Each structure stands twice: as structure tokens, then as C-alpha cells.
Length: 316
Image 1 (cartoon, rainbow, N blue to C red):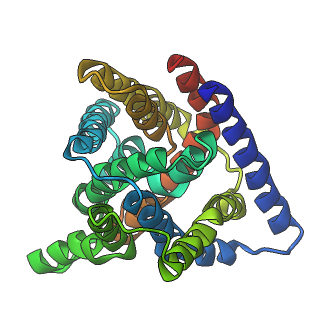
Image 2 (image 1 turned 180 degrees about the vertical axis):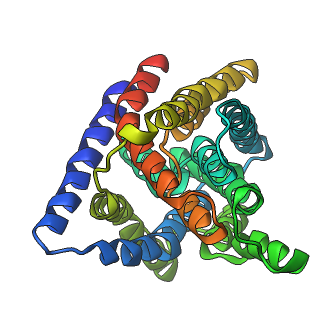
């Protein structure tokens, strides 16, 4: 049943993404609208989804293992990408682009949408996905990811304080605040029989339910087919590391730690997501090869349609 639900979720997302592309072609949406939509997703719909999911499930310390598995998988992929980029003798900006694209997964932007559809709004699955996404991916992306972009980029950030400031921005962002709030509320066991409380949760659910649609539209609006021939070998490396090695590493760890079936499905699905779109922002900001990073994001997204199906079959 899970396999069918996951495949159905991917098909729905693909159809919605093509809808976004058609709306852009018809002039109803513009490229600039993608940035606006992504801001709404990051600052409104994802925080609402996180609070709604986490606050309705009792937080368990053992679930931190979900985040640990993702952190280990991503760091291992970063080392592999660094070694391959060194062997290929890539320039520093290109090396940074390859490492960023091979490491960080789109767990929040696309991961929530896939999990939400695949598990039919299962609160426990969404809560587990939030732990994986925010503690296992986002904290690493906004610290180690920024450091990688700074180290391999051509643009220097002003002094040590400037670097620290950039790397701590995530910890007062709406996503991180909603994570802490959601975990805190999970311990209070608030009754939803109260009219005010039930109204708040209904509002959160309404906002969160729009997340999948907005994510798909945003990807469709921002997705452009580009010529990959000049950098096909770098694209191949990023796709193999990000979409095959990373989920297999997560699967191996899930087996070692004897994860329950739901946990195993969540970590493998999240690891199988394409490259996080924020890596292109970091590449542009700190002087890595932003064009190459964008190409790699596009390539991993298109390729993930196939590789995610393979991971679903692996979970049978």
C-alpha cells in the first residue's frame, strides 16, 4: 500500500509541477513569482505544517536518531563529492557547487509534500519528517552548507563575526521557531475540544494543506530546461551521490539501528529528495559556480522522478 501511495504522490506532484510550467508559459505566472511563492512556503506554510504535525504527537528523544542518520548520510556524501571533485581537478567554485549539490536534500521544500501525499496526512509521519528535515537537514544546510559555500567561493564574508552571523540566521528563522514551538506544545497534551484551540488547529491545517500545491507550482515556475552537455560528467556524479548513494546510506543505517518500518520509509524518502534549492542561493551569494549549481539542482530533480521510484521499490 505504501508503494502505491508513494508512486501516486510522485505522479500528483509531477502533474502539478507541469501545471506550474504551463502557467508560466501562458503568462499567468512569471519567473519572479517563484521567489514570492518560495518565501510564502518557507515563512508561512511549512511553519504551519511543522507546528500542526509536531504538536499533535508526543515527542520522543529516540526520534533524534532520525536526524542523526540524515546528518551522517549527508556528511558522508559531502566527503565523497569533495574527493571526486579533487580527482576531477575542478576549480574551487565548481568544487563547491558539486559538494553543495551532492550533499543537501530538499527535505522541507519537496520532502514534506511527498510525505504528506504518500502517507495521506498521517500526523506521525509528518512529525517524523519534521524531525528529519529541520534537525537532520536544515541545521546542517544553514551551518555546514554556508561554510562550504564560503570556503570554496570567491566572495569573502566580512570577518569572523560576519561568518558566524550568516551561520546562525537559521536559528531565529520561522522554520526553526516553529520546530521548537511544535515540540514544546507536544508535551502539553492540549485538548482540541476547546473552540479556540480547535479553530487554531483548523487554521494551521488549512494553511499547511496548501503547501503541496504551492511547492509544485513554485518548482514548475522556476524550472527551465538547460543544456547539460557541457557538464554532463559533473551532473552524473551529483546524481549518483545525491540520489543513489545518500538514500542507500540512510537505508543501511536504518537497518543497523533496526528502525521501525515508518522511520525507515521516512529517512529513505527524505534522503532520496533532489538537491535543496537553497544551495543555489548560497552558491550565488558566496561566489561558487551558481549556474552549475542551478543545473545540478535541475538535473537531480528530473532524475529523482526515477530514483525515488527505485527507492520505493527498495522499501518493499
